[in-house]
Image (tube, rainbow, N blue to C red; front, side, top):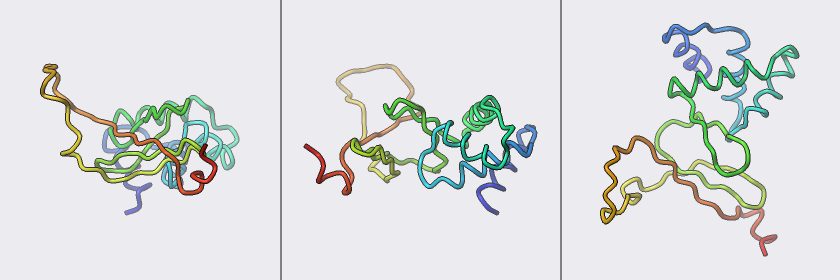
Length: 141
């Protein structure tokens, strides 16, 4: 079963309607090999569905986030990005070109200091590494 079909089935299993617009948005998400913004998804879907609205894209993305099949990321780049990648992973962000990559990381090495008791039950952690990709390193000052 493709990622698109799997996500569509998850929508239906949660009692949500699977419209052609939602399927197109899911297809666009799966077509990206990186972390698209809502605007990028909108532009891609609008090529085939000129009457697609921003609201439909944003509402569908919000629903997928609520279902925990999509992560909304604020990577400090000015726009929120969306990530379908499953499992724990960190993100590499190039400060030159803005490229974003998923990378595995040592989950056990990322810990809060025991010197500062906080009382929180941690449910999520975002690890972001910023630097320069190989293409941008020669241009770094």
